[in-house]
Image: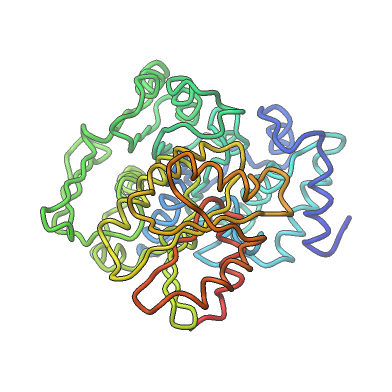
Length: 423
């Protein structure tokens, strides 16, 4: 084996390929074919989208487990441990399991160069095949058509949402972005779109290739009760019959993603579980509207890093106001629509705190973030790190205040490492 420690494998992968991101399927598909990964016995669900992908996969995972199905879930990026990316039956796989898979990939690739993400994607599929799972739920990393996950021909493919993000790779034309994400759809297989405002290119692509189209606002629908505490779901069976579930409790995860996961599960040929209400109540995902109490202070962590996600977060804050002050603690990548993110939250955040992510060359400086907020008429206090900011805030906040920590996975990960010992 090239390495016996997971950390050594990951460090080596980071420098193996000429670029961190290399869109295209030729190399990764060639390795997958050598490993016999392209015709799995498991049923496959692929999930693309600007926001809500991880929530959709988490819901699919919970649905499978509720029905006694073995399920492999692949997501990215991770927050604290690489193992978070590859789960079997809701449990992170062991370092040794990942290392053994990396070795199999290394042996199969020969002289083919792979990116860090491509290695991880192949490892997840390989491990799921080794474990003999019934269902694979695979989250697309970037875009869809040219993402490594798209080497798999999904039985059901879901696009959760479409908005501007990763413009350096996907462009700024929402129609083109929709077409790229729709690239995970397949002929004569189910194609779900959970975004009622998706550009026409998504439906056009599905229809052009002869996929079985199911979209939000047509056969897939959600209706939230006036009380804001319950919702109704409408979906469709494989035979085209409408299904209804009424008076369901609102989940903590984004409703369109949950609704699409339920639809995808049904289109795999599975039944809606009788325990659906309790399942929805228990759905949680780290870094997505995650609440933490630390030394008596209240913290809400969310990886929101584009305007669409920030608007969703703002809606959550408005629906659950606190009696005291809402503080915003932000570190973000400089290539994001920072003004768009801040604009969505200025009505809900009373006091801003910005920080550097000094180990990340992609990160915006705290001075740049402070200037962004000044353009919106907001002041911001600057801190050298997330950890330093949390130390300062912990000495100031009262029991009725809350701190919203957001802007990137890196921001939330550092905050979680600090808050993990809280009670």
